Structures are given as structure tokens and as C-alpha cells.
Amino acid sequence: MPNCQNCNYKWSWSDTVKIGFKNNKTCPNCGERQYVAPKSQLGISLFTFIPLFIFVLLNSFYDLNIAVFISFVALFVIGMLTCIPFTIKLSNEQKPLW
Image 1 (spheres, rainbow, N blue to C red):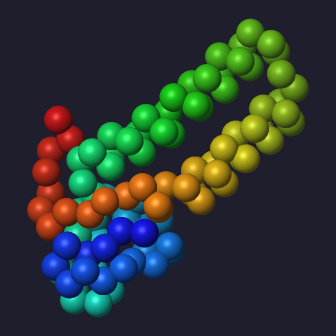
Image 2: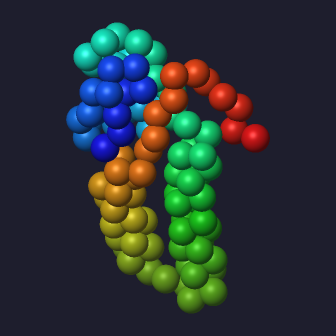
């Protein structure tokens, strides 16, 4: 789990998931705004879009049943929500992705 860059408070899993969607959130301990570091944003984007792109390609080549396709995507989303909070790093300032 990430730590606040101001007070070194270790964020909870739910707070980390929330900042993963919004890219910024105030620290629950000190109240300072924290941002997702650009390297983490890029990693999350790649970790999310590349497998989903592969699922779509597999579906087009193998003509998977819609229930199987939805099951694969649902399992992926659950896995993503479980793993991503452990890879997020925080920053005190908002920096551009590139």
C-alpha cells in the first residue's frame, strides 16, 4: 500500500482504490492532497488496457461465447482491483504523465 509523502501514513486498501480512479485524494491522516505518481499512472494504464485489448482480439479470432468473454473480463477486473493498490505510488504534486 502507498504511504503519504507528507506524514508517511500507510493508506488503506479502499482509499488506495479510490485514488486509483480519481488520481488525487486528500490524506486521511494529515489532510494534504496526494496524487498518483506518473510512473504509477502509466503502469496502471498498461496493466489495464493491454489485457483488455488481448481479450477483444481473442474474442474476434476464436468467437468466444459471450458468457465466457464476460467471465474473463469480470475475473480480470477483480484481479486488477486486487493487485493495483499494491503498485500505486503517491506524490505531493501533480505531474504530467509524459
